[in-house]
Length: 485
Ligand code: NAD
Image (cartoon, rainbow, N blue to C red; front, side, top):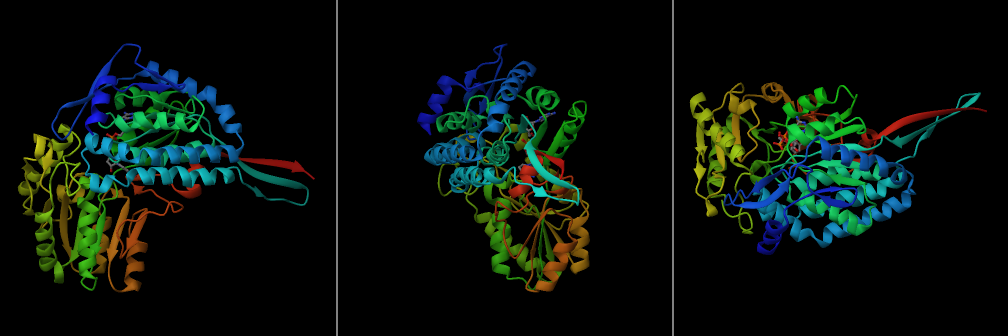
């Protein structure tokens, strides 16, 4: 870590446009701060409309030859990107821990998942243009797909490398070129990605990275006429802003947004397994993950015993330096986010909920943005702690009487990303899954991903799906060609 951060402090982080590292024309920069000890990790180029325009032009210039590259060749070069990611997996993990505060224990494998994203979509590149023939008596109808053009990808600060590759790999496999605007709170690994693509032999201009703030570089990207679509991962309110900003240029948008996901535990569930899954899904990665199960709905008959067992486990979670392999909870990403999470400790008390574990800031190593993993019980479904996304190691428990009440509480919220159900009765598991307003549901399972399956949310949690062919639907235009026989 010391070697990597010394290099960053010396070199800083620049934009990557048309295969070259560049600074902003104005010379503007911002600092990225370590959540561990609040030290300056690097000076980062602060892009605006000018740099976005250069990057969009570079992506437009590179588009035709990338689109027309034989799909087998595209497949081969994207596999080489995956090789390069694997070769640098530990650097990526360490940089993310230092930049974002998420524990090494969970981040060690994140780069491998990023490599898997590239491998999966590399293999799909050969079928991207596959289509249908819908003949009539007098005509052939060949339905095919073509890449939409240069696209913008805007990503958040949580597991930033993995999430960026989840959007960028399918765009490149589809034959699009990309302008990436990474999150300003965790820019370090985004600086590595274009270098790895260059090392793998991806032509210049195919991926361009412009650092900067959402309201400047991000906004300019969503308004740029050469950019045909925006793949966005972030907060629901930012999704609304992007939709408005992109209206004048009729941007196609794909949104993966926030969540306040229910995990429903019935009295007949395997309670030991449910307990493990509940702990993992909200307290791993500091709870800074969109799919975390941040609302626990537990059946009244077992609620007291389950909450006590949970509280005992939460109190034992190890808070520490993110690079300590034993650490389960690291510092939160940024001072503003830390203040937000801490505010929910007071909100819980003011609303009359019961703080069963945690509920305070913590003096972690380095004096950074540490909080105690927190369990809030006795919540009413309409309380703010039961409705709002905290995005930290913070679980709110709501008891329920029966199946109908569980479904009603789970759905009484603006979000609809994921849902988790624990019960021994398969009929009930499927009934509840059918009624939940959520894009992804796991039954008697924690969150596991299989890349061909659709990923995305309903309601305020998103628009569109990623994964498998769903990603290509977004990054490509469907075209019908009709020929007289
Ligand atoms: P955010 O919305 O604040 O920022 C995300 C990105 O959008 C950043 O790069 C930011 O600079 C940019 N941005 C901000 N304002 C913009 C604007 N007006 N125009 C264009 N770009 C703009 O989100 P965050 O705080 O970085 O990330 C946390 C959020 O992301 C949480 O709500 C979380 O649930 C969500 N998230 C969702 C998923 C999912 O798959 N559904 C995955 C990860 C994170």
